[in-house]
Amino acid sequence: MGPLDGAWWPRSADPVAELPPLIRAVEVSRGRITHLMLQAEGWRSQPRRMTVDGRVIRLGWFTSGPAGLLTTTNSGRDRVDLLVVPPTLSKAAAAAAMAAASDPTNTLRTPEILAAVNTTDPAALDRWESDGGHLRTAAA
Image (spheres, helix red, strand yellow):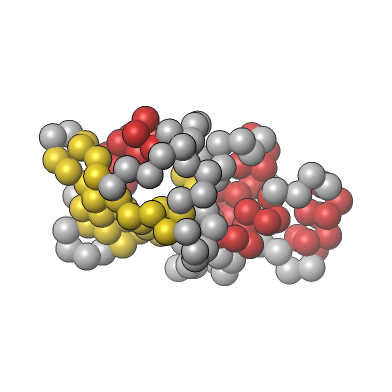
């Protein structure tokens, strides 16, 4: 397994609107989430707690550490690490980032994936992939 368990592409920078559906989706396969840690950059607000389905989820926000990382912890202390794809990315760039993060052979961390897909120069991305990058197109 690579350093990431998958990716998530929120449609806005509003954590109150975006996080509850993610929490529910992760809980289907990984159990009840008790805590989330997120990179603070890019979010409109940083609430410390959130009520989802009548229970409180603790949220932690970090200003240092890997860009684009979201970590969930469940009641059994199991964790899920996800790449947070910025809502401003194009559909093609987001698809490439999500494919890379979801690839079990991926060895890249969130900042490396985001740096690769945030380029506005498609030739630069092609060069990066031919130099050992691990991004795949959505169709691959």
